Image 1: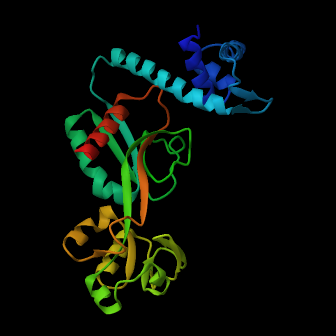
Image 2: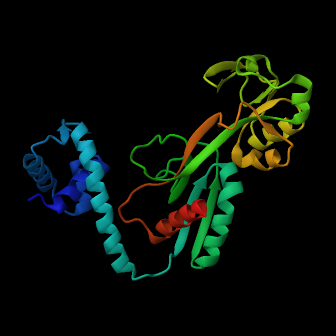
Image 3: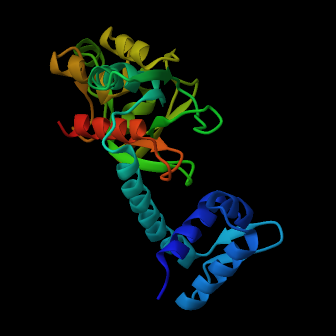
Length: 286
């Protein structure tokens, strides 16, 4: 029978990236680690890892098996943590990073309520529109919008971020409602001197009449009638509802990207992180 302990050890080897690091974390020798993984592969009859003197690579079968093993490891850690914590409240500093707009418009109410509910927690909220390195930046948790770039992150999907092409009624009265093929010649508001926008399967090379570095400025300029802007639903929703902006090209978003809560590891996940992720998910579902 295959030992669950060996399955957890395999997950640790993959996550740590080497036998040496995994052995150190598990408190055993490198030789014992290697022997147990070799035994596991023999029992399964499948090669899980490709080993060289300098690198460790997970095979296709190993990657699939890792997902299951990592899930088992997480459940074991969760069970141990529940016993050790004994239902104690979250405590200590929680460092969270988020894209600026999402943080301002969505995250602040969650943070506020979390601090009221859990008075022994302190939160440092970092709003930054740049690539975040969870470990290097010393973060407990980050909000990530778009495809995940780092496969070592643990991620919980929270929802989707929709982006629409919008324009003011005044702009449309003057210039007419554009068709997808007309977009290249339209007056647009962008974030670079040259951009490519895709609408209804048509890709258009855009030369913005106004280039900005802030989404809120782009939305304000669109409401003022400067041109067509591509902005998140989170930002333009109220203006659309009030009639100050209109969504172009039908109800389907121009861009739809996933929203994740990401953290460095499943193992030894602090209760403050787990509870905050749960609060985020509950807020999304509410």
